[in-house]
Length: 297
Length: 156
Image (cartoon, rainbow over all chains, first blue to last red; front, side):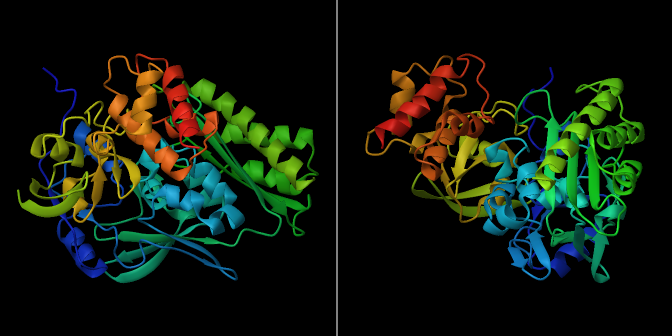
């Protein structure tokens, strides 16, 4: 009989005292140890048998992972272990990065967001990650501690496939840095799930728009799409259209069509590829229209 | 597999427990401390039947390792009543008829208590959002939501 409530497979819990110790342990046990923050994704994968690990390495509480810091000239640094609910209610996030809060609020349930983290959402590298798009359009850069010391990894080159990133054994993401949003920036995240709240996205569309004198249109739009490609997808053609042509309903539809053309979704339990493609167009159009109406208010 | 000795507070009592590395907080509560009010529904962080308060915030106890709970303060459904007096959300869920099979009720009560702790006068939308991670297959939710509303009103 199948056990409907499997426990976690046999593994050891490791709580290192420092990043150096954690990194050394992870490097020495490549393939059998992983760092974990909230555990909301890795517990499910371990229970399902998708991952086989001997060790879970708890990196919560290590240097800089537990804090949110805002520097008014630079930007926001969110520690890797800060639960999403703390991010959502942080006054500097609410004031300067409302898009992050908007996206995080769509993740699962309140109690899960007390464990789930933004950095965990990113490192999980699911194409469906709700907060990943917001971090991409805001130009997020990950701070990584690895066997060779500290380095940074921009999100633009971080994802390599579903569940795959540039991280190697011994690497621990300690925080994400989000530069100050451009002046006048307006963001929007639209998530299509099977129900109104709490589900994984069938399609997720993140848009950030702001005035930019260097473009022909006078504006720049950053777009990221979730659940429609092996990695979070930036439809660059759509972004170019909105930089090159005067913005109106027609250009927005053209850009939304370009986003749809860029999407390469799959059929799965949450939706068909064809449905997803059309919803990319419709939701990108909706998100762009929402952002544009706020930019021109 | 190694065991971890942890000391934590559960419903106001200090407990010392030896737990294997793969034991969840849910398993520890039910199997080590015999607090079976907290239910194992999905074991995947979806249904909320295992919700407990950890350091004042609701969490899915199936998604927390027991070994992580060193020094934590846990409140389960068994800890809601004080001095033989039901918590107001327990009282109103009875009065409003918000219990049928009862499996979701412990998690529902903990999520409701957490909501009222952070927001004593919630709107219906606040209540629905706070309970989105607690699935109930019997009631259709309406009576649970009215119970939380009644609890909020009773404490105004």
